[in-house]
Length: 444
Image (tube, rainbow, N blue to C red; front, side, top):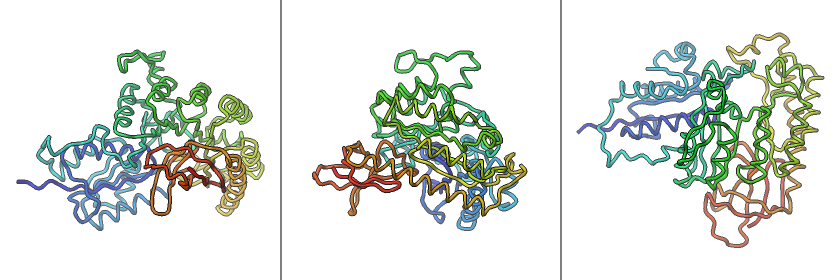
């Protein structure tokens, strides 16, 4: 009797990469491979890499090196895999390298070095929802690959290709399987969520109609959100590029069909810098839309990310950014110092900003945003909010409000004064009595 091969797996990078890892792990489990948590027991190690910025590249190269040192039989996939020469220069002993979402190629490489085990339908049982790396009560759903934008600070299109949207019926099938398996929150991700289906519909010159659950539905973002909203769970949108049709999502949020949460990476507020980034530059129009969105959906939470120290950014440009966040009063904000990335046009631009200036601007930006965030969270004191329970231990109960995405936003720390029985994944009503810059405290 042959021994079933053991596969070690290391997943790095963003939620989109996590979804790729889940798919590969599902394929491995379906074919009967054992997934093991240590290098020493593995017949082969797969490293799913990130290559978005230099620090991520370094982390991926170090992870590959550790896997080689601890095990020796390593195959590499993911975004950094698109730069095979860069990996081979540092780690020539890697067995095989593939780029992102190369599921079939990864499995072929696994078969080459760890022969496919004998299939037993009574043993090789994979849950309908597939293998998930997130807690049981939430899951990421990726609706497309790639991106049609050519932002000058980004190399994702060169790694993941142009926009390639999944058919709406396959997304809804996956979402329903997850909900049936007990998932209480669906986090919708892609490189550009608001561009969903534009690639397919442009080819057809109209929004294509498909069938799901015996009903004809259009293959577009608004329909996708409407249908996801019928599943009875929280639906949260990430990475929403501010196209005009995003305005149509806000009424769905006001109606409670999807969470009143919009993650829009605006990146800057100076028209000059936005033009250099190849991002939309009508910042006054953005402020006007934010005002309109909040009028339609007062509970709306707005999250965004910004880059400071982009090449050519002057003090005047940076002040425009500070003025914008002061006026926009965004709820959740991430800030990054511009990082040169090999292959990104911005890396070669003139007027690179010194590191000490980037650092100083980063701290000024975060100081202002912390004040804004703290003031907005103070407004929630005294309110009773629905909170999803993430964790229960001897120290207490920790959850998230509708305004908080896992791992990137704040938490709600809960005292259960009612002795109500709660478990992870439950949504409970919590009265808020305290807040700081990021988190809330309350009681059931």
